[in-house]
Image (tube, rainbow, N blue to C red; front, side):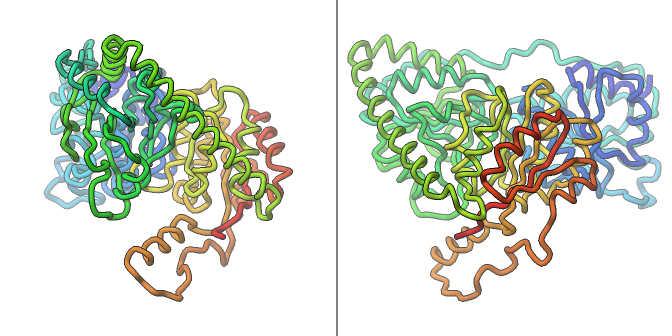
Length: 554
């Protein structure tokens, strides 16, 4: 058999049913072999970054590793930004790129470069297959490394001549790997003793909760302790129901603000994440003074990495959280139950007050022109069909989105990690291919959308019935807010306004852009028209774009 057959057999053996890619000449062996593997669908993107973004969201949604096929050096370069985002998201990807014929290695061929070195900084492992006899072993190891906790992308370069070489080494499957270890009972005991001794415990939860399907266990532990639950500022999935009374929202992006949000906590329970991703420097720790830390992770690599953990516990998320909950109930008894009831009631009152305040703020802004962010989110949420999935790159509208929508469990919500923009439109492709039976809406800012606008063509080409909602405020609003913050933090006195942050002169017409790529569109300027537009878009069963004119920075 040839190297290209071993490559494809390896994908099938690892349960891969989609390849996300942008083809080129060095990918000819793969493209020519696809017809022999009808179980693997090739999703064509017009830019390598779109392919990578789609694959990253696809693997987050399915829980299985995904495969990306890029084009040689410039194509790999185009994908590196999204590869960074996949690394920050812990997305288990096997990213490949065709490489020039190794017999021309010393001739400096067209498009030739050291692909392994290019990919290494943003991957867990980067390697080139040097002969067909290596293909099976490298592909098996690539999937293993990509899926080992903390998961992340690996890169494999595939020289065109190696893909055509003969080998007797067939593909190797993954075997049955049980990756959720039982937590150490002694560690559970120590963690629970601190939980029971805490006056004000707080939980901060990361995406590993969603990836391991441990959200119900997290809810149960929070209710058992009467603890508020914060989530990471940038998160890929729903790890805790956002309308649960114990939900406190996302932590901010500097140490002082995080410390303030956690309040008078004397115990911070960090579960399933890197903690914390800061944007601005602030002196001190994000952990309140005197508070102890209990950290629960599925990989020892994260324990105590950024902060000393007073108790660090390695174990599968479901097992670890369940063990802590059961031990707390057994040891805490009626006393814990009574204290937790009081704490839960207080949290419910806070949650209700915040919901009422948001409703009042939405009411006050309801009739603004252009449409307020709060109303836009409320109208879109009201129009969604049952079981809809939201792919979010709303940026400055995110707080209103979090209040307007009801995200109950993993799979209801996906967003990007790492801070790079353009993930929304690309990610919606991967989300829809992962959930072909669920309606998918992508809510994106206009600036972010332009980083991956080619995704519209892919949606049309593959008949993916995604509703793309573009929030058009004609500016990089988040940058304006950040410029204000910069000036304040560094004492900069400036009358320069907001240079190079307005998306005008000319104004982009997203409906025309969509039409040019085969996607019909609707332009909405009035709040009264938005809900009907979203309902109609979902009703036609095809990809559709809605451009919504919303308020800019006030």
